[in-house]
Every structure is written in structure tokens, then in C-alpha cells.
Picture 1 (tube, rainbow, N blue to C red):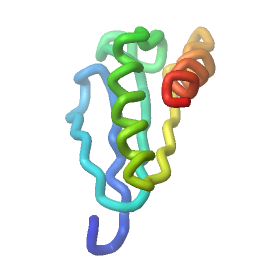
Picture 2: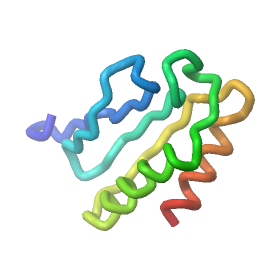
Picture 3: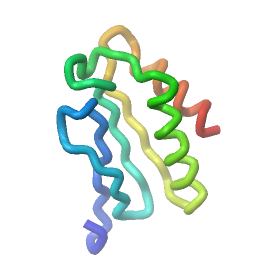
Picture 4: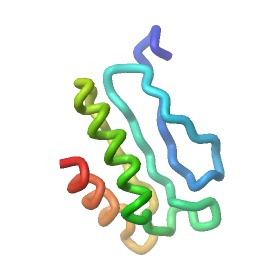
Length: 91
């Protein structure tokens, strides 16, 4: 993936699918599907869960990487609120 500059997708799914924090190019692609396997796409991430990602995001930004984060935990409007919260933590 590094050779061809393809981003590894860091996908958080509450343990339902394998998770790894691997960076393979000059940008980072994060996907948030839900904080636990039982409520994928339908639950809110806690502040503590988002703080871990904010610390990583700040580190990657300091390295000169672009960071893209997409939330898909949207039942109940959680995606919008969590995205805003993560953005505020990183800023």
C-alpha cells in the first residue's frame, strides 16, 4: 500500500471487525461505525473514546499529514455530534 500510495482505512467498529492504526501514505483515512459491536451505526462515541483519536489526529497533523474522519454512527444523529466533538478536540 505504501508503494502505491494507497491509504489503509482505519475503521473503528467496536471490535466487530479487525482494527489497526496503520498509516501508509501522506494522509490518514478514519471511519467510525460505532463504539461497540452490538450497536454499530446506532450509538454515540464517548468523550474518552474520541480523545484517543484526537491525540492521534494531532500527531498525524504535526507530521504534515492530512486527516480525514468519517462518522457512520448516524442513527439518532450521533455522527454529526461526534464529528463536531472530535473536530473541537483536535483544534
